[in-house]
Image (cartoon, rainbow, N blue to C red; front, side, top):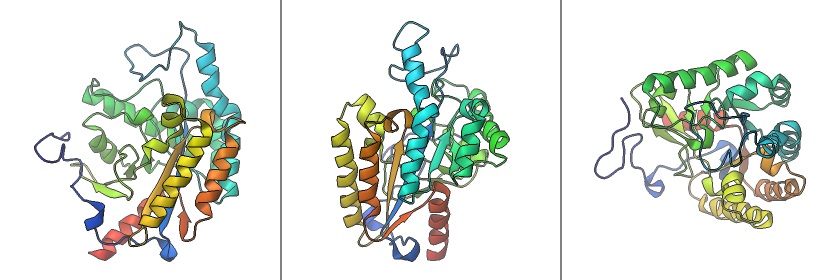
Length: 302
């Protein structure tokens, strides 16, 4: 059954829970702030599939749009290695959101990410095919299972997490993901702690990302200069770290190698993460590590 709209809370995907009223959340070794970086590896197709949905101006020229396609592919060929190098430098375990077409057509990247200890989570089929409310339930279920199956075949493991392409969902998406065995979802940008979601099909935890610090949202869509973007990361870190004096907080970034992997931007990511990881009491972890700790903390507090 999909989430229903009603009075008060806009839907029943999760319970209303103001952060200031919750029991204190404790991270490992008394850390104040958990740091997670989700790296999106997403394929742009040469042309949109008939009937598929894209947001924004993904295809903004008459086809074939070689400029747009090759700009995105830069992330797969060059940018991803710069981004992973920076994360490794600062001791951050990457959580790589990989779509089905990347998993199938870029086996080198799958092996490279696994070899560097990345967690790989589901990311739909392609950035040119976004989940939306026009999909029939069977169509969306097939879409989600096709994405999960592609990762299972490529990595020999079932992904635990999920980030939808462009955060796209229908009102059925959390239930279908839980039914398919997904343990955590990164689409809901409404908190600074993980929280349980309500589905009729199984347990699911929301791992909220900082949408305003998504490089695609800040740089490509809103046009912030990269030095301002780096400053936003530092300022957000300072505020969240200070607010975490009483209860653990989550600092979760989402970056795209075709954007932050550019030679004139990567240094800003390097310096910003140096600032974040230079704070005392910081725990850098993958998405599944954070969610597992959160689940155990909730169970132990009951």
